[in-house]
Image: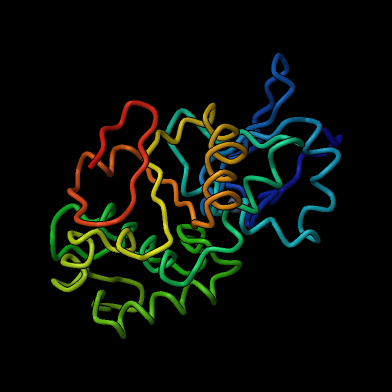
Length: 236
Ligand SMILES: [Zn+2]
């Protein structure tokens, strides 16, 4: 650890909401950021990868991984051995899948149909797999143009009935060539997913693998698509 703790998020370069917390027993550091939420980095990652992370071009996709997999009390751990795999898994996401991720984020943030959801470009861009806020703005505008979202105020969006119909029908699950993997986002399964399941689906089968939290599967009945379930989830 450098003598002076960094004053900005290691991933998105935002100012910290809370000071870095050091765990001397684990040799790790916990960062809390408004955009990325919370994540843990190993000392080795901080010292060896941290100084060149921004130049690698992968930092925004690590932000995306951390934010999308955030679970209170169970933050993603980034190490020297897994950081590149985690980032790459969010780097080549298709337009359709990113649109799907955006609508599911709005759905998950809507306490009831018709609720307004704040999408702050500066803060919320890592909820989908994009490199910056401008790309996030593009997807929000596209969702409005496709009439999946209604823009009510400068940064507030409402899922339209067409948007709800899209999600109820399975959304991007109906896209040929995509395999949705329903499994827990428990980070102990990250390596098994990235290096085992995803590699097998994409390299051996030529499919695009998309990992979806199991809780989503229990909440929604998917009409179409290829589903693989792990970690105790049941097939839909
Ligand atoms: Zn951040």
